[in-house]
Image (cartoon, rainbow, N blue to C red; front, top):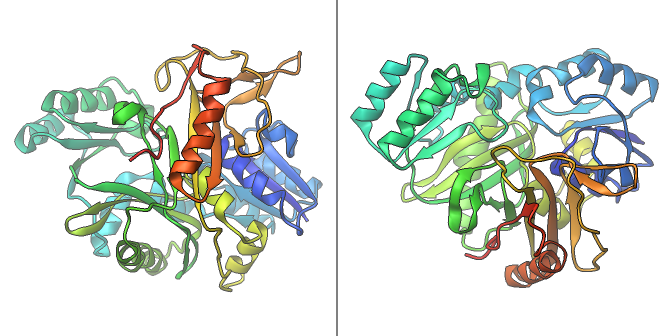
Length: 417
């Protein structure tokens, strides 16, 4: 079959690497893809939210299945457009994708369906938002309501930080329309983890949990990012907590979406936290997480396309997993998540028998050399029997290739705790 993967990041490269192992797949296309993806798929120069163009391409190229990686095309209705054209596509439609597209919707939805999450209030007026912050104090969490590429969340440790965050969003329009409304939540203490599932209606098939590292610098210092690395599964997460999360969060969410006339099909992502009162939801996403995908898919034994076909046919895909652990560390452009330079030449990415490389923000220049095009440039990962062994492989590679390169940086502590 011919498969089209929509997107251009590390998540999409990881999906493509997994699809390349499938006996069902003979051609893979990516729109728009990136420099590394171009070595594993045919890149199509179309933006991931150019929906009409993507539909036309899928029809002309006789694409059998389309898999959508990023959230923006989902919230813009790419699934609806493909379905109207009678094309097979995997992902939630626009009505269902709102669970990620609006944090205010997601919080209200959780309260309607008794899904455990932090208390919250939504504001559009900066004076009212500030008054609420002064009343509640810190720590407190400020979130832009809409999509902000993983950067619209501020965990404010002081009242001043919280005030600054709402001013950035409501006055300075830092995130444009996405920040025209803010959700202010009580702070939840505990260990975070990501739990995703293949979902079709009320059918829920969970993946192994992962933990990502959001802060830019070692020891969880610095600003929030889209994710600086991840590992899976999570050894300090008890099975009963995972089971509770499936029964009290993922399944009720799927059931609730059906009940509200927004049945969810695709990957439901639960950004969760293990608290003293059990697992609670920090956020829902409507697609695979990035960088969690890069450490979960290498552990999946199943044929990814067959899993998708089974899920869409209301059949249990019987997910099975390799033993061991995957650790992945992101190499980022110096300055990320703030301003950074692009078109910086990468060092030679020598092949490694023990590591895999997933490209996120790369392109090839005229000299056939990889250059940077984004904040998160690539991820180096490894699968080993223990997290410690996987970390050793990853950091042995990174220290050899990137240690003396001042144009890029990476955290030294992914999977350390």
